[in-house]
Amino acid sequence: QVQLVESGGGLVQAGDSLRLSCVASTRTFSSYARGWFRQAPGKEREFVAAISWNGGDTNYADSVKGRFTISRDNARNTVYLQMNSLKPEDTGIYYCAVRRYYSGSSISNEYPYWGQGTQVTVSS
Image (cartoon, rainbow, N blue to C red; front, side, top):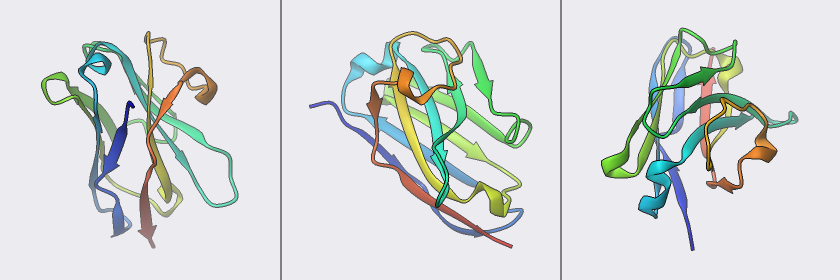
């Protein structure tokens, strides 16, 4: 069974940084597009960032542009989300997701594979 495992979440103060990681249990996903989404309490899941299989293409939500960076290490089957200048509104559960081909898609239904999520809490 394919697994995606996120880590790196935690409780930080506004202005701090965190780096999230998502490891895939299969090397097959090394050739797939990856994405990060988040869900705040009482809100719908929203797109954060996406990256193509080789890292050559990326897409970001406007709310995180210039602060977050998505990257990947295919040798480690891992995708990262570097989050800088965190704000309280970045609080939520962060999920990594996988889809076969990159399109920069921000639509969660277009990603068939999901991790369990990691909690990020930013205090003011």
